[in-house]
Image (tube, rainbow, N blue to C red):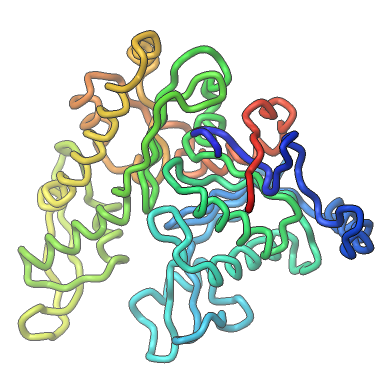
Length: 380
């Protein structure tokens, strides 16, 4: 199977060539010229398929799509509402507010597919949207995945993209994509430490020579921070709030390090005792206290990776420091908190929200350069 930091064409032969539909003797061979034509009329793309958001990068155009990984379906079915209109931003606005016949779901949990059918339909919607409504497209796709997912979970991602219309699928680990997107020297004989704090997972990897020397995938990230805030407000204010309200508190007054000026914010919800709507004032000091536990777990996970790194690479890391990407990396004071705990310089990469997606686009554009990290994906 694959090593960390490697990418894989979706159906491999022993010689690492990519399986195409329409092998000799197969009836699908009849349709191969048509599929080839549709493929070369399609827009190849890199996809950061995240728990919280999906970003799509296209060669020469950069990030052209950035929407929440949320889909609204009819309750008890996998049928998307309004021919796919309730996907992304529209569906996220429905979270916690849907009537009995509608359900807003996140088909990915902790960076992996939790609902195969809905993920396929969501990918099909995004691929079609990139192609301005054309349904017959057959693009080549690079998808970033967490380093800790199993071979079965990798195949689920490949099959979902394939069924959504992709003619060829490559997988790349998220830290490698982030390192490429931030223009770090990941192909050189130098150690680089990337920390990608997304919605469902925190991906940590020491990269060198286009591979991961040491890596881990921690299932503690932005969503867990939101849940910690929900629990704190319920426990200290007897107020029940939703995940979107918790996210607003995190973005507006959340921090991992003392602020120059502490803030406060009103949040609305349902009183846990009376059941009636009301509001409460929450301070940034409270939110920092609520976030202390997930932040500490992230710090400990990074320390664990550093302790496993070879001595020569540790010397590189002392000079290079830590590069942090992902939405969680935007939490106020997180670089200072991590730096204080690790004794290293911690910086936030350029445009951290799109670093992984940019990396998938560069990988797709330079497949010849990165071909040495491609390996065959074996199927039964």
